[in-house]
Length: 238
Image (cartoon, rainbow, N blue to C red; front, side, top):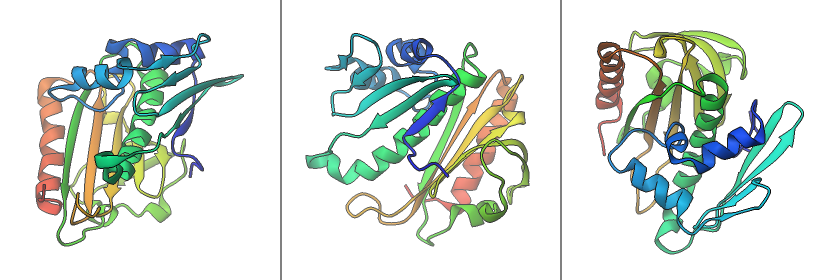
């Protein structure tokens, strides 16, 4: 597992990574997921009171989070250093960090796998008063999963058969490439467990983010319906 979940080596040069951070249309291909207000969120985070280094290797965001790009012979090491959350934001700090861990993996995936193909996303989340374990609910034995970069095949408890490669793993998140989530190449499935947070979330939660590429409307709807049904069954709380 990664020692720093907010640092990834991207197989692209620093100029390409910088464009993903500084061109809104490109940022929308990896930050978050499709939702009303995504463009406004991107403008607020990446273009409001930010500081750019002259060499385009450092970007300081309004809340104190800092992206640094380190050119390497085999790509660019992208690291996000978190600022110190204060006030009302403090209780969201762990969730924000987990969100950034997802997003930088989505950045890496977009650049390495689909640099020119628009993504379509599915996002579902919920909580479980039964304290459901996400991996158990899905039927994934994480102890038997191979490491990042290795091929896998899974049949989930939902009945879905997935195959691809393990993209990344951490204690709380699992990223899998999925062949059926793209017309050409593969898509990305991110599964994330969330611990209860006092004043924010009484019960453990789960988030699922699916990045698809080139799927037709019917195929995209079928994938969304599958994950909606899973969340309604196992994580019905808001």
